[in-house]
Image 1 (cartoon, helix red, strand yellow):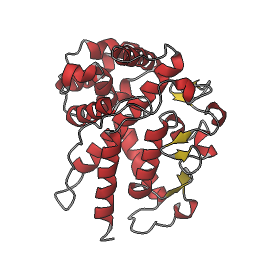
Image 2 (image 1 turned 45 degrees about the vertical axis):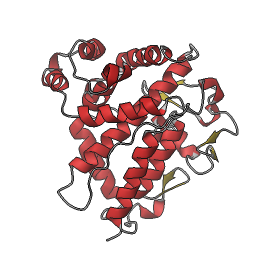
Image 3 (image 1 turned 135 degrees about the vertical axis):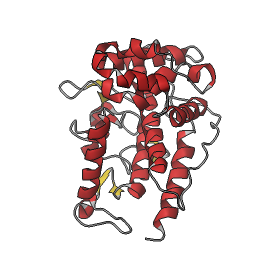
Image 4 (image 1 turned 60 degrees about the vertical axis):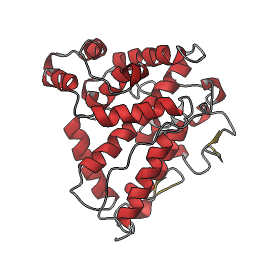
Length: 287
């Protein structure tokens, strides 16, 4: 048990470093800016709080315009390179999101990124980049919440690294996916089927599906189905989960720890799911 705080801290530091490195479709500069904006804006933006207070009168289909005209204060240059409105909605207003917001966010992310780099003008390229933005912001929200939930003690929130220079791994969705689109009947977020991924694709130096994901993660009912399009960030998430959540092997939770506690854990998998259900219900989670 004494080793767990140090193990968790090292894993959190590593995840922060990975979030600030070039991803599949986003540069390290952009990813680091998303992380910093998320840490500063989550639960603190006065404009987002005002929108939440009046949420009963906010039609979900109007959320995009409400946020854009809400006067949010941004902390990164150029309103987080134009992506601040997406970050603030993701970290503070997820309970008000809708399919219409998702489509508008995809167009906005494409517009912002294509201003400084050449991006193929396809729906798949829009969806892939939005999926990575969501994954980076979602993990940053989780890391921030972890440290703010702790009493004073041995774990201190690590500093956010500077963005690592370099290009993203891929320039187009066509390099990675045979197909990328929302799955009919399974929500409006983009998802993947196993045959949608290019055969032999390498992610983080390993063959995709070799160790990071399993076929189960491509089932539409799996929570990981929405992480899968952000391939490298999703694999970072799985490795992080193996330390702070429940041990994960070949892309899914080790079944032997469903009712038995893993070494050093205070809860088994069932207990963790009870806690997660309480939290996501409380915040109206839409991730």
